[in-house]
Amino acid sequence: MFYLIGLGLGDATDITVKGLRALERCSRVYLEAYTSVLTVGKEALEEFYGRELIVADRELVEQQADRILEDARETDVAFLVVGDPFGATTHSDLILRAVQAGVPYKVVHNASIINAVGVCGLQQPLYTFGETVSLVFWTDTWRPESFYDKICKNREAGLHTLCLLDIKVKEQSEENMMRGRKIYEPPRFMTVAQAADQLMQIVQRRRGEGEELGLTEDTLCVGVARLGADNQAIRVATLQQLVSCDLGGPLHSLMVTGQLHPLEVDMLQLSAETSLLQSLQVLDGSTYWS
Amino acid sequence: MFYLIGLGLGDATDITVKGLRALERCSRVYLEAYTSVLTVGKEALEEFYGRELIVADRELVEQQADRILEDARETDVAFLVVGDPFGATTHSDLILRAVQAGVPYKVVHNASIINAVGVCGLQQPLYTFGETVSLVFWTDTWRPESFYDKICKNREAGLHTLCLLDIKVKEQSEENMMRGRKIYEPPRFMTVAQAADQLMQIVQRRRGEGEELGLTEDTLCVGVARLGADNQAIRVATLQQLVSCDLGGPLHSLMVTGQLHPLEVDMLQLSAETSLLQSLQVLDGSTYWS
Image (tube, rainbow over all chains, first blue to last red):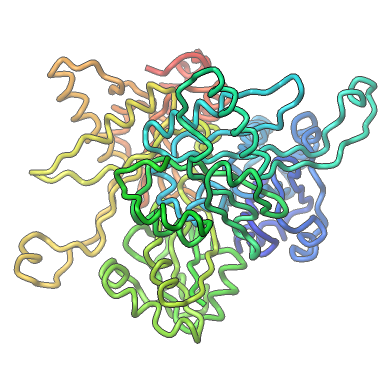
């Protein structure tokens, strides 16, 4: 049996009892380590699960998936994924390969960022969020802006937007890649402040071109870090204010609000910057913030 | 401490280790029992958790929340929710009351329907799903159709739609309510077949009025039941075919597809009706189904 097991958000104890029992039966346990991370490292997971974990980087999963599935018809193999196996990143490809190889599979679900964002106070993530977007680290030559337009489209429809922020793990520099050297850069995780800064740059550039803006420096946003962990952080502030915020270690996510319901306003006040409190109190459900 | 603990989907073992440990410390444990259900009943949960559970119906939660929070400053109280506490239904109101009463709270997240839908083969639920809709049981005098328009709007943008289906638990008949008799109807859970039937009725009525249709009897849909449980069921078929499907016991959900990616087509084939297989094989990512 091939088990795809979600680890949830937070720490080692966020695994489900079902997931832990399945993992204990397995002869090999892989840990997917390039699309997300927990607040604790591999060693803490190994200690709590009582099992040695094999780190699965992008290369192993995308190019040598057969090695992962090897002998999974005769024995049990687990593949652990932070969050839910079908949350922000899907692992459909592994399942298709399992089916083709005649390997039966089971999925053990867990929390992912999409339901956890509700904790910051934006109500009913399923109903009031539009399409999710991803922000990538800009380079000197690649500065995509399409996520900005998607956020504006969601806001036009009154919907909030969840922005997933870039993760670079085991990436090679251009030079090392060209020279075929397997030397990897230190991991990088985009912060809420970096994401807000990219959005501010787009706002300023487009304003300079006289464009009408659907998202400005005064738009109400929510920055979150390490959701589900004991030291999770939530910051409710304008886009501009978030540029200088420090929410600590990874992972960070950013929400841009659309239309706010009165109950959402009440919830947001629990984490709002003091300067926002008064303005938030006069908002009502029929009004856009900013 | 007031703990809001997600139970996930499936059975008693889908609770997280963190949730189970918190629950074991509590002096009272409530089970929210009106917005969702697991495939196992209260007794199975009590046996596995080793704790007596107090069933919390809508009346208790919405009108007597203070009873739930009573003495939670001095002792630990848990409130269990199927799925995630901030998934399909939020319990923001309980949190606001806790804060007002000076009761500290913690949320233990878990899987909810939104990430689990990925298992049916529709890729990256966060990116390719538009706004979620709810279908309610129609009555003789109340037959809302707004969800149909939202599905069409999502499809126009190439996005899939998750349809959450109605649950009626501890509802009174109109007569019993008027007479103030606390007699409750048996619980009802909308099936995929009933949901497909409602959509078909809208299609037929609107076609009769000469409307251009964004969703027809030939639109590709996915019916799912008991996601996360060992006996979960997934049926890929046209809307019309789903009218006569039987996916067994609750809970059911329905997905209406938008634009399909080639990898999604491959995944959907794993659960597709035989008659659909050939058509699915000739689909490509740039084409709408139907």
